[in-house]
Each structure stands twice: as C-alpha cells, then as structure tokens.
Length: 260
Image (cartoon, rainbow, N blue to C red):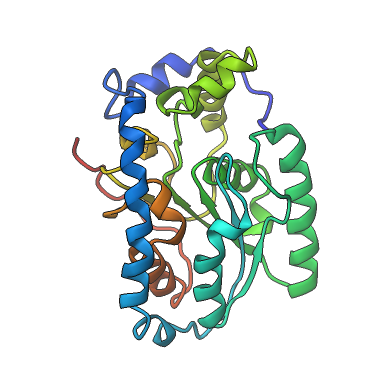
C-alpha cells in the first residue's frame, strides 16, 4: 500500500504535529457509546427534504471505501444521497474490509483506472476510517486518477496506533509503531489534490486529533457531531459533501488547525 520511503526524518515530522505527545488510543470501554451512531439515521431522515436540492451542476464519479470490519452496506445511505444528487457512485465491492491493504489497494487502483476510463474524468475518493487512509495513499501515488479526497474519521498519523483496533494488528504480530513510522514517511511525497477531513470529538474509536493533517498543502478540517460509527451515514457529513461537490474542487491555502 505504501511507497518505499526512508524514515530518517519521521521523528521531526511527528514533532511538528500540533498534538504531538498527546495522542492516545481511546479507552475500549467507551466503544459502547458508538451505539449512539444509529441516531444519525434519524437525523438523516429529518434532513431528507433538503438533500435532494443539493445537486451538482457538474456530476462527479465517486468511489466510497468502507472502514476496518465494514462493508458497502454501511455506506449505502451516503452513496444513495450522492446518487440522488446526480453523481455516479460506486462502493468498493470487495466485501468486508479486513485491513489487508497490500491486497485490496492494488485492486482498488485497478477499479479506479477502469472508472476513469469509463467516465472520462478523475474520481472523487471518499473513505471512512481505514478507508480514508487508503483513499489518501492512493491519491498520493496516483494523483492523475483523483480529483479530490474526502475522509471521515480517518487517522492520518499513527495508523491503528491511536485507535481501539490496535489489538487486531497486535494479534497478527504487526508492529504498530513501525506502521506509524512508515505512514509518516509518506509525507515526503505530498498529496497533490484537495482534501476534506471530517472528524468528531465524540469519536470513541479513534483519537480525533490523529485525524488532523498539518502536512498536506490543501486540507479543510470539518468538525462534526457524530460518533465514529455514525460517520458512515452522517446527515451532517452528507450535507456538507453535497454542498462541496456543487462547486469545482480547487487547491486552496491551508486552513487553521483545530484546537485541542
């Protein structure tokens, strides 16, 4: 999934993060709060009359990548609202995302190339959690295939280190500290497309501060009121996405980093 990059300057990059030294994995007992994510379905129903009006004058081709242990059904409502707004929308169509990025990312790149050829335009990549990390790294390596990236609850530093899923990687004898080093080394190659990064301070799966990207040249950080689970079908995220897709993507100056 990642480029082969030297890791000598990683510690210096980490020290530049505004929340360096403060990042921690959420307590696992807090994960039960994620059940409140189903409330997002009710909020989506409340906004049902608003969303159809947010159509884009220039429909996009959109690919939505689910998070770890998730699958396309959990992003159906997001994809349905994008479809209603006139966009060509696709799921990743690979079943459950088990986190085997070395196998799934090459398949995704192949799918994206086919969609670019079919529709004659670069894609908008959307990714939830690990899916957002995958979307970012695909964009970093294949900027010609991607118009912009939208992530929700995606840990842009640390990988699984600052999430409650760290046990899954430890179970497979994967060194998550080494993963953090390798992920940070990727910033030697900037992401050349606009990024919209949604995060929530109610996230009980990922330390929200790990979703903040001070390194990429064009990132808009958007705070939402949702659990991590609820981001997959958040009315607030969907409404903002649809508004963003109403206007052409452009590279902008970095916006202020959120406060802790």
